[in-house]
Length: 266
Image 1 (spheres, helix red, strand yellow):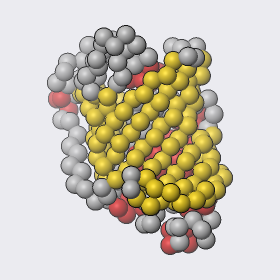
Image 2 (image 1 turned 180 degrees about the horizontal axis):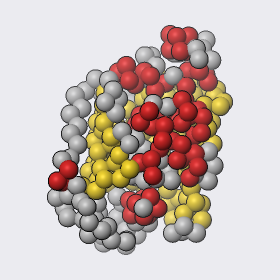
Image 3 (image 1 turned 45 degrees about the vertical axis):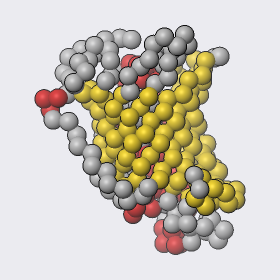
Image 4 (image 1 turned 180 degrees about the vertical axis):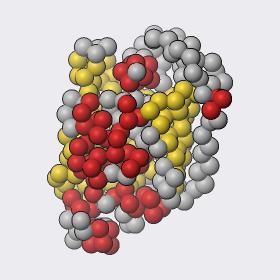
């Protein structure tokens, strides 16, 4: 089921908490500990808007999937509108997919594949081989931050700007297995699945923190083995976070609105 969803959404488009958080400028704190605690600053912020970009490359083919929406870090609920690229001929314009992100679940509307337009598809993220870091065409913002709980190495690169905000740039590598053990209960299972399902559990990253220690931009580089493409797919997932504290009214679909029929292969 997980591979089929990946094929449809992605491939069809051809310790020291007080110290680390208290001195979040990176110039005096240990960068590894700062990264491991970065998700906590998002929970403190409560919510934000998010823009996502997922670039996938395999062989000579490269596609980009974009999303935009809101996320509530305390309730771990989000809503994104995900736009798939046109096919290479430019003749097939995909309808935007509405995605709801919830603890342990991904809901998709306008999913296609024989699913009625007014119905949602529900996917158990712990059963996905990528833990929903790639499947939905967008990485769950809190899961993206919690990958950093597995930081093995990190360096402070320097100061720069992201969307007009002064930020501090860090670069490093995280281990998904370690991240899973330190993650919140909702992300523990999905990240553990990703640690086993990706081509490697090591995830290079670039992170940009503002003066309050909140992630403004995070970029991960994943790789997974695609049975459909008979090769390794390189994925660069970028998430931009802004308008912290914005109202994020996310409501999950009623059980009667969830599609229970067979999903066609695409």
